[in-house]
Length: 360
Image (cartoon, rainbow, N blue to C red):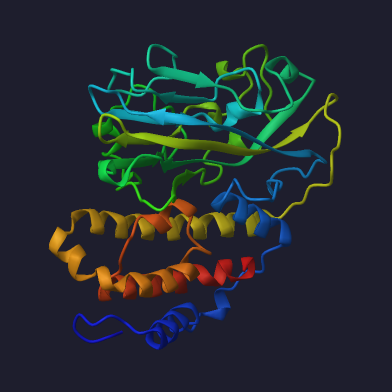
């Protein structure tokens, strides 16, 4: 790295990023990961990606793999300058039940709600199946991966405020929580809206309850949790704080497996619980590391951020490697890494790489 405050040149950047990415690893801890587990890990990191994988845990029944999504534009309340996009990932299995709730400029509330009202809209996904399809002994589903991502769509002059990014650690409902409650969770990340048409995201981190490993069904209303899973809870959110006229484009994605008599086009599924658990655990560790750096950045002073702005190109190169291991939203949290941050990054990559290098 350059001495003092001189920008790092391209040769230094390339050499240092290579050293971080190829640091010696304890090969005795290496776990062989199957192709299915690799696809599963990539889908956890980027559920909007091309793959529609299976969940390589539980009994490997032939299933139909399907990607469901919703898109829209959200805004903050004109008086409170608060808003949100809230997702119940499991409910995206049905095309006639609200699974996403988002605010507009008419919203006057301050706590999360999943009941449409003035300034709060609810929408369903584009799944091929309606709620009635999930009656007992008919279609069943289980969630593989999911995520929310938002992109600022206003002017640079008005790009202010912050995003509060949150997935409930046990996939319990976030309904009724205020911004202050969300910020009390360890895994809550706060970041400034990036420019240059960049996305900020929060992703489903994998099963946290035995019910999420099983195929679920619902009678009548999928969001009523009859035969459902905790993933049906509104457990993921991006809370918006900003100018009164702030608007964002949002997308919510979910990958599912479907089985049952109405389901056509089923393909073979795979079973690799060790690989799936290894990938999920390593992603949790890497995401936790990134969140810690994000909190460190949030606590830094404007002077600190100004001094380290010249490291941006260096960080971009190192972080390109880290993004292989870190959920998509984490790469946007840390605009710079100081010397001690680089050391932390190296340690995190060493810890994660034995489990995840097979995914590259």
